[in-house]
Amino acid sequence: MGRDKVFVTRELPPVALGRLAEHCDVEVWDEFLPPAYELILGKVSGLAGLLCLLTDRIDARLMDAAPEIKVISNLAVGYDNIDIPAASQRGIPIGNTPGVLNETTADFAFALLMATARRIPEARQYIHDGKWLTWHPTVLSGQDVFGATLGIIGCGRIGAAVMRRAQGFGMRILVNSLESADEIRELGGEKAALGELLSQSDFVSLHVPLTEETHHLISEPELKQMKPTSILINTARGSVVDPQALYTALREGEILAAGLDVTQPEPIALDDPLLTLDNCLIVPHIASASVATRAKMAEMAVDNVIAGLQGQPLPTCVNPEIYQRD
Ligand code: DGY
Image 1 (cartoon, rainbow, N blue to C red):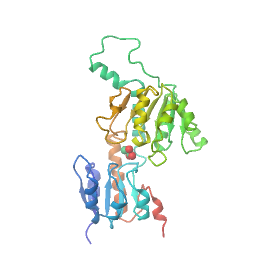
Image 2 (cartoon, rainbow, N blue to C red):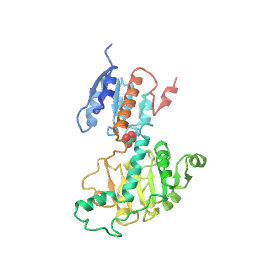
Image 3 (cartoon, rainbow, N blue to C red):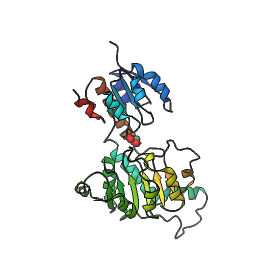
Protein backbone atom coordinates (compact mmCIF):
# COMPACT_ATOMS: atom_id res chain seq x y z
CA MET A 1 0.00 0.00 0.00
CA GLY A 2 1.36 3.45 -0.95
CA ARG A 3 1.83 6.34 1.42
CA ASP A 4 -1.10 8.59 2.23
CA LYS A 5 -1.34 11.74 0.13
CA VAL A 6 -1.95 15.11 1.77
CA PHE A 7 -2.50 18.45 0.08
CA VAL A 8 -1.48 21.58 1.97
CA THR A 9 -3.06 24.69 0.52
CA ARG A 10 -0.23 27.09 1.41
CA GLU A 11 3.43 27.16 2.32
CA LEU A 12 3.89 26.55 6.07
CA PRO A 13 6.94 26.92 8.30
CA PRO A 14 9.48 24.27 7.12
CA VAL A 15 9.68 22.54 10.50
CA ALA A 16 5.95 21.75 10.46
CA LEU A 17 5.99 20.66 6.83
CA GLY A 18 9.07 18.50 7.42
CA ARG A 19 7.33 16.71 10.26
CA LEU A 20 4.26 16.12 8.13
CA ALA A 21 6.39 14.71 5.31
CA GLU A 22 7.69 12.00 7.67
CA HIS A 23 4.16 10.57 7.72
CA CYS A 24 2.82 11.00 4.19
CA ASP A 25 3.41 12.32 0.69
CA VAL A 26 2.87 16.05 0.87
CA GLU A 27 1.95 18.37 -1.95
CA VAL A 28 2.12 22.05 -1.06
CA TRP A 29 0.43 24.87 -2.94
CA ASP A 30 3.37 27.27 -2.90
CA GLU A 31 1.81 30.29 -4.57
CA PHE A 32 1.03 33.46 -2.62
CA LEU A 33 -2.65 33.49 -3.55
CA PRO A 34 -4.92 30.62 -2.48
CA PRO A 35 -5.69 27.77 -4.86
CA ALA A 36 -9.06 28.17 -6.59
CA TYR A 37 -11.94 26.07 -5.29
CA GLU A 38 -12.04 24.16 -8.59
CA LEU A 39 -8.35 23.36 -8.26
CA ILE A 40 -8.79 21.84 -4.79
CA LEU A 41 -11.85 19.99 -6.08
CA GLY A 42 -9.77 18.50 -8.87
CA LYS A 43 -7.11 17.30 -6.44
CA VAL A 44 -9.03 15.73 -3.60
CA SER A 45 -10.09 12.41 -5.14
CA GLY A 46 -6.98 10.51 -4.01
CA LEU A 47 -6.27 12.47 -0.86
CA ALA A 48 -6.16 11.04 2.65
CA GLY A 49 -5.68 14.45 4.22
CA LEU A 50 -6.23 18.11 3.46
CA LEU A 51 -4.56 20.90 5.43
CA CYS A 52 -6.40 24.07 4.48
CA LEU A 53 -6.71 27.73 5.44
CA LEU A 54 -9.60 30.01 6.28
CA THR A 55 -9.44 31.27 2.68
CA ASP A 56 -10.43 27.83 1.33
CA ARG A 57 -14.12 26.97 1.03
CA ILE A 58 -14.59 23.35 2.01
CA ASP A 59 -18.14 22.23 1.27
CA ALA A 60 -20.14 19.04 0.83
CA ARG A 61 -19.38 18.85 -2.90
CA LEU A 62 -15.66 18.88 -2.19
CA MET A 63 -16.02 16.24 0.53
CA ASP A 64 -18.01 13.99 -1.84
CA ALA A 65 -15.18 14.27 -4.35
CA ALA A 66 -12.76 12.95 -1.69
CA PRO A 67 -13.93 9.40 -0.85
CA GLU A 68 -10.60 8.48 0.79
CA ILE A 69 -10.28 11.56 2.97
CA LYS A 70 -9.51 10.76 6.62
CA VAL A 71 -8.95 14.25 7.96
CA ILE A 72 -9.41 17.94 7.13
CA SER A 73 -7.27 20.24 9.23
CA ASN A 74 -7.89 24.00 9.22
CA LEU A 75 -5.00 26.32 10.07
CA ALA A 76 -7.21 28.63 12.17
CA VAL A 77 -9.32 28.52 15.27
CA GLY A 78 -12.35 29.72 13.27
CA TYR A 79 -13.90 27.24 10.85
CA ASP A 80 -16.75 29.09 9.18
CA ASN A 81 -15.10 28.24 5.83
CA ILE A 82 -15.96 24.56 6.36
CA ASP A 83 -19.39 22.94 6.23
CA ILE A 84 -19.14 21.16 9.59
CA PRO A 85 -22.55 19.39 9.48
CA ALA A 86 -21.61 17.99 6.04
CA ALA A 87 -18.29 16.74 7.42
CA SER A 88 -19.98 15.17 10.45
CA GLN A 89 -22.57 13.44 8.26
CA ARG A 90 -19.70 11.91 6.30
CA GLY A 91 -17.70 11.01 9.41
CA ILE A 92 -14.82 13.31 8.43
CA PRO A 93 -12.98 14.81 11.43
CA ILE A 94 -12.24 18.53 11.18
CA GLY A 95 -9.30 19.98 13.09
CA ASN A 96 -8.65 23.57 14.14
CA THR A 97 -6.01 25.45 16.15
CA PRO A 98 -7.57 26.79 19.36
CA GLY A 99 -5.70 28.11 22.39
CA VAL A 100 -2.29 29.04 20.99
CA LEU A 101 -3.49 32.28 19.46
CA ASN A 102 -5.53 33.64 22.37
CA GLU A 103 -2.96 36.01 23.83
CA THR A 104 -1.58 37.12 20.46
CA THR A 105 -5.07 37.92 19.18
CA ALA A 106 -6.03 39.66 22.42
CA ASP A 107 -2.84 41.76 22.22
CA PHE A 108 -3.89 42.81 18.77
CA ALA A 109 -7.49 43.62 19.73
CA PHE A 110 -6.05 45.85 22.42
CA ALA A 111 -3.60 47.37 19.97
CA LEU A 112 -6.51 48.31 17.68
CA LEU A 113 -8.39 49.70 20.67
CA MET A 114 -5.45 51.86 21.73
CA ALA A 115 -4.62 52.96 18.19
CA THR A 116 -8.17 54.06 17.41
CA ALA A 117 -8.74 55.64 20.84
CA ARG A 118 -5.57 57.73 20.58
CA ARG A 119 -5.77 58.20 16.80
CA ILE A 120 -2.28 56.87 16.11
CA PRO A 121 -2.73 56.18 12.35
CA GLU A 122 -4.19 59.68 11.85
CA ALA A 123 -1.34 61.21 13.84
CA ARG A 124 1.24 59.44 11.68
CA GLN A 125 -0.50 60.64 8.54
CA TYR A 126 -0.62 64.18 9.98
CA ILE A 127 3.17 64.29 10.06
CA HIS A 128 3.55 62.77 6.61
CA ASP A 129 1.11 65.40 5.28
CA GLY A 130 3.38 68.16 6.64
CA LYS A 131 0.74 69.36 9.15
CA TRP A 132 2.90 69.24 12.31
CA LEU A 133 3.61 72.94 12.60
CA THR A 134 3.35 73.36 16.37
CA TRP A 135 2.12 71.82 19.63
CA HIS A 136 -1.59 72.55 19.88
CA PRO A 137 -3.97 72.08 22.83
CA THR A 138 -6.72 70.29 20.88
CA VAL A 139 -5.17 68.75 17.81
CA LEU A 140 -5.58 64.96 17.51
CA SER A 141 -7.19 64.60 20.92
CA GLY A 142 -8.53 61.11 21.46
CA GLN A 143 -10.40 59.06 24.03
CA ASP A 144 -9.08 57.82 27.35
CA VAL A 145 -8.73 54.08 27.71
CA PHE A 146 -7.86 53.89 31.41
CA GLY A 147 -11.04 53.74 33.47
CA ALA A 148 -13.33 53.53 30.41
CA THR A 149 -16.07 50.92 29.93
CA LEU A 150 -15.33 48.01 27.63
CA GLY A 151 -18.10 45.85 26.19
CA ILE A 152 -17.02 42.35 25.22
CA ILE A 153 -19.36 40.40 22.96
CA GLY A 154 -18.46 36.72 23.14
CA CYS A 155 -16.42 35.67 26.12
CA GLY A 156 -14.60 32.57 24.97
CA ARG A 157 -10.85 32.16 25.25
CA ILE A 158 -9.96 35.30 23.29
CA GLY A 159 -12.65 37.48 24.87
CA ALA A 160 -11.41 36.43 28.31
CA ALA A 161 -7.82 37.27 27.30
CA VAL A 162 -8.94 40.76 26.25
CA MET A 163 -10.66 41.13 29.63
CA ARG A 164 -7.39 40.42 31.43
CA ARG A 165 -5.76 43.28 29.56
CA ALA A 166 -8.69 45.59 30.27
CA GLN A 167 -8.35 44.94 34.00
CA GLY A 168 -4.83 46.35 33.84
CA PHE A 169 -6.35 49.50 32.40
CA GLY A 170 -8.84 49.83 35.26
CA MET A 171 -11.75 49.35 32.89
CA ARG A 172 -15.30 48.46 33.79
CA ILE A 173 -16.06 45.36 31.70
CA LEU A 174 -19.52 44.49 30.45
CA VAL A 175 -19.92 41.09 28.84
CA ASN A 176 -22.58 39.74 26.54
CA SER A 177 -22.06 36.03 26.06
CA LEU A 178 -23.39 32.57 26.81
CA GLU A 179 -21.42 32.21 30.07
CA SER A 180 -23.29 32.63 33.34
CA ALA A 181 -23.17 35.83 35.39
CA ASP A 182 -21.08 33.99 38.00
CA GLU A 183 -18.54 32.79 35.44
CA ILE A 184 -18.25 36.28 34.01
CA ARG A 185 -17.89 37.80 37.48
CA GLU A 186 -15.03 35.39 38.20
CA LEU A 187 -13.30 36.72 35.08
CA GLY A 188 -13.77 40.28 36.34
CA GLY A 189 -16.76 41.35 34.24
CA GLU A 190 -20.48 42.03 34.58
CA LYS A 191 -22.96 40.12 32.44
CA ALA A 192 -25.05 42.52 30.36
CA ALA A 193 -27.82 42.34 27.81
CA LEU A 194 -26.68 43.37 24.34
CA GLY A 195 -28.58 46.67 24.37
CA GLU A 196 -27.26 47.59 27.80
CA LEU A 197 -23.70 46.79 26.74
CA LEU A 198 -23.97 48.80 23.52
CA SER A 199 -25.46 51.87 25.16
CA GLN A 200 -23.00 51.97 28.08
CA SER A 201 -19.67 50.96 26.53
CA ASP A 202 -16.93 53.31 25.39
CA PHE A 203 -15.37 50.43 23.46
CA VAL A 204 -17.12 47.37 22.04
CA SER A 205 -14.92 44.42 21.10
CA LEU A 206 -16.26 41.43 19.16
CA HIS A 207 -15.17 37.88 19.97
CA VAL A 208 -17.92 35.62 18.63
CA PRO A 209 -17.52 32.96 15.95
CA LEU A 210 -19.30 33.60 12.65
CA THR A 211 -22.53 31.59 12.58
CA GLU A 212 -26.03 32.17 11.21
CA GLU A 213 -26.88 33.82 14.55
CA THR A 214 -23.90 36.18 14.58
CA HIS A 215 -24.01 37.17 10.91
CA HIS A 216 -24.49 40.98 10.92
CA LEU A 217 -24.97 40.88 14.69
CA ILE A 218 -23.79 44.49 14.63
CA SER A 219 -26.02 46.26 12.16
CA GLU A 220 -27.89 49.57 11.98
CA PRO A 221 -30.04 49.16 15.14
CA GLU A 222 -27.06 48.03 17.23
CA LEU A 223 -24.80 50.84 15.97
CA LYS A 224 -27.53 53.34 16.76
CA GLN A 225 -27.54 52.13 20.35
CA MET A 226 -23.84 52.88 20.77
CA LYS A 227 -22.56 56.19 22.14
CA PRO A 228 -21.36 58.81 19.63
CA THR A 229 -18.00 58.67 21.42
CA SER A 230 -17.71 54.89 21.27
CA ILE A 231 -15.33 52.73 19.26
CA LEU A 232 -16.01 49.34 17.68
CA ILE A 233 -13.23 46.74 17.50
CA ASN A 234 -13.59 43.62 15.36
CA THR A 235 -11.01 40.83 15.44
CA ALA A 236 -13.64 38.09 15.03
CA ARG A 237 -15.01 37.77 11.50
CA GLY A 238 -15.90 40.57 9.08
CA SER A 239 -19.45 39.38 8.50
CA VAL A 240 -20.33 39.82 12.18
CA VAL A 241 -20.67 43.51 11.26
CA ASP A 242 -22.85 44.90 8.47
CA PRO A 243 -20.29 46.97 6.52
CA GLN A 244 -22.82 49.38 4.95
CA ALA A 245 -24.38 50.12 8.33
CA LEU A 246 -20.91 50.63 9.80
CA TYR A 247 -19.95 53.03 7.04
CA THR A 248 -23.08 55.12 7.68
CA ALA A 249 -22.55 55.10 11.45
CA LEU A 250 -18.93 56.23 11.09
CA ARG A 251 -19.69 58.88 8.47
CA GLU A 252 -22.67 60.27 10.36
CA GLY A 253 -20.84 60.33 13.68
CA GLU A 254 -23.19 57.80 15.28
CA ILE A 255 -20.03 56.15 16.62
CA LEU A 256 -16.58 57.70 16.85
CA ALA A 257 -14.32 55.14 15.21
CA ALA A 258 -13.74 51.51 14.31
CA GLY A 259 -10.70 49.24 14.34
CA LEU A 260 -11.13 46.25 12.04
CA ASP A 261 -8.80 43.31 11.62
CA VAL A 262 -11.45 41.53 9.57
CA THR A 263 -13.77 42.71 6.82
CA GLN A 264 -16.62 41.57 4.62
CA PRO A 265 -15.42 40.58 2.07
CA GLU A 266 -11.76 39.70 2.51
CA PRO A 267 -9.66 41.12 1.09
CA ILE A 268 -11.55 44.41 1.20
CA ALA A 269 -11.96 46.05 -2.22
CA LEU A 270 -9.78 49.10 -2.72
CA ASP A 271 -12.87 51.14 -3.62
CA ASP A 272 -14.74 50.10 -0.46
CA PRO A 273 -16.18 53.28 1.12
CA LEU A 274 -14.87 52.25 4.56
CA LEU A 275 -11.35 52.90 3.24
CA THR A 276 -12.21 56.56 2.66
CA LEU A 277 -12.82 57.21 6.36
CA ASP A 278 -10.12 58.60 8.66
CA ASN A 279 -11.97 57.16 11.65
CA CYS A 280 -11.82 53.59 10.38
CA LEU A 281 -8.56 51.72 10.88
CA ILE A 282 -8.46 48.55 8.78
CA VAL A 283 -5.68 45.97 8.77
CA PRO A 284 -5.50 42.71 6.77
CA HIS A 285 -6.62 39.94 9.19
CA ILE A 286 -3.35 39.74 11.11
CA ALA A 287 -4.46 39.53 14.75
CA SER A 288 -2.84 36.10 15.24
CA ALA A 289 0.19 36.99 13.12
CA SER A 290 3.14 36.73 15.48
CA VAL A 291 5.98 34.55 14.26
CA ALA A 292 5.73 32.27 17.30
CA THR A 293 1.95 31.91 17.22
CA ARG A 294 1.74 31.20 13.51
CA ALA A 295 4.43 28.52 13.95
CA LYS A 296 2.44 26.95 16.80
CA MET A 297 -0.74 27.02 14.69
CA ALA A 298 1.08 25.18 11.90
CA GLU A 299 2.31 22.55 14.37
CA MET A 300 -1.21 22.01 15.68
CA ALA A 301 -2.63 21.74 12.17
CA VAL A 302 0.03 19.16 11.33
CA ASP A 303 -0.66 17.23 14.56
CA ASN A 304 -4.31 17.02 13.54
CA VAL A 305 -3.43 15.67 10.09
CA ILE A 306 -1.04 13.06 11.47
CA ALA A 307 -3.59 11.86 14.03
CA GLY A 308 -6.29 11.66 11.35
CA LEU A 309 -4.06 9.65 9.01
CA GLN A 310 -3.33 7.23 11.84
CA GLY A 311 -7.02 6.81 12.63
CA GLN A 312 -6.58 8.51 16.01
CA PRO A 313 -8.96 11.20 17.39
CA LEU A 314 -7.68 14.63 16.38
CA PRO A 315 -6.05 16.49 19.31
CA THR A 316 -8.22 19.52 18.52
CA CYS A 317 -11.34 18.42 16.72
CA VAL A 318 -14.36 20.66 16.10
CA ASN A 319 -16.77 17.76 15.46
CA PRO A 320 -15.79 15.15 18.08
CA GLU A 321 -19.33 13.75 17.93
CA ILE A 322 -18.17 11.66 14.96
CA TYR A 323 -16.15 9.53 17.41
CA GLN A 324 -19.22 8.74 19.47
CA ARG A 325 -20.77 6.67 16.68
CA ASP A 326 -20.81 2.86 16.75
C1 DGY B 1 -8.42 32.27 13.21
O1 DGY B 1 -7.56 31.46 13.59
O2 DGY B 1 -9.60 31.95 13.08
C2 DGY B 1 -7.98 33.66 12.94
O3 DGY B 1 -8.96 34.42 12.37
C3 DGY B 1 -6.73 33.68 12.11
O4 DGY B 1 -5.72 33.37 12.98
